[in-house]
Structures are given as C-alpha cells and as structure tokens.
Length: 263
Image (cartoon, rainbow, N blue to C red):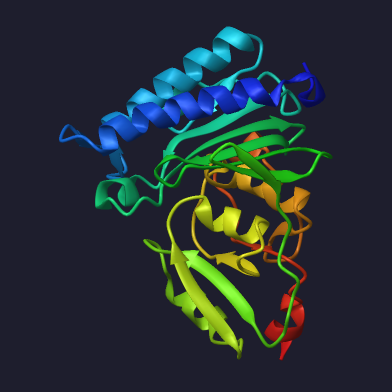
C-alpha cells in the first residue's frame, strides 16, 4: 500500500482518539510516572496512547510494520525501502508532567527513507497538523481546516524556536550570530509545527533526536515550503541501517544560514 492510497481521515480519527485518552490522564490525579532504561520519563499516558495507536494501525494496515518509541525492540523491517509507521505516543513527556500543554502525538509513514504522511496532534491545544506528500500542509483547529505556509524571510525580523528542555551552549552560540532576532522556547514537535505554520523562521537542533520526534514535522515543513536538513544542508533521511538517531539539523524557511554562519 502506497501513501496515496491511505485515507487521511482514518489517521486523523485515530490520533484524535488517542489524544482524548491522553487528555483524560493529563487532567486527572492519576498520572503514573516511570523511568526507562535511559532514565527518560515514561507515563501511563504514553503507554495508553501507544496501545491505542498500534492497535488501530495494525487493524487497518496489517502489512505495514510499526516503529514506536515505546516498542523499539519489537520493530523489524525486511528491506530499508519498505514502508513503516513511525509513531511517538506522547512527544514531550517532560512537558506533559510539567502541565504546560506543550506535548504532542506524532504519526509518520516512512517510505524509501522519507516521510510521505505526517500528523502531529497537540491535544491540550486542540490543534491537529497534517500533511500528505504532494498535497500541502494543514492545521485543523475546532473543526476548521486551514492550509499553512512557512514565514516569508525578513532579515530585520528573524524568529527562532528552540527546545524548552534541551537548550545547549551550541544552540546559544548559534542564535547569537544573528542580529534582529527573537527567541521562542517550546516543547515537543510543536517547534516543527511553528516553522511549518509560519510563526518562526528556524528551529536549529544541536543534540540527539529520534525518527519519531521529527519525521511527521519534517513533512509538514516541506509541504509548507520549507526544508529540514542536516548542518551540511543535506535533507535528513530515515534510514534504519544507521539507527534511529537523527543528525543535528536546521528546520527553516528561506533563511540563508550559510550567509550568516560564514560571516
């Protein structure tokens, strides 16, 4: 099955249902916190969302393997070019625990090492972003759907977004190379949504991220007219032969980084 044959309405329905279950836990007094092997946080909301998403995806697309952050060891792919789902049941678990609303659910379809369908849902903000390769990028809020586009670059008004929880010294040095710039801090894949929807010019990331963190947002950005490249300006690929960790990257509009970085 190719991405053009997949009904986005079904995927929108399942991500919204997962979001409803996550919100029930988020607004309850029953948030259970655990620690993974790498000491990163895990909650019962992550587990609930993972179970729902994998169940729904497998029932509808039984021949497409599922790579989830919460079940990496179960994932198998016969050929690097085969299609697979790449999901993050709750992206921004720290933000979820801090109750600042900046967490998302991410679903991406990967084909031939590129994302061809991407959905990002921010349940606490009631914002759903979605894209299919070649068909544009959109935001759905309160049942209203609007096409989104990247921000027009203005050298006198450069806007950056960076991680709320993972701001590095390298990122700080990078931002200081730009005058007339403003900085926004945000959690989860929402940073990628802000680039795609034209609210910021660039999200620079110097530090580890995984496929499920950025694949859906990558497609949103490209379908909105932007790019997501490594720091050598090559488009990021999702090739499992090299593991699931992404290179450092820039997600941006037409901001000419090489001009500023070479000065």
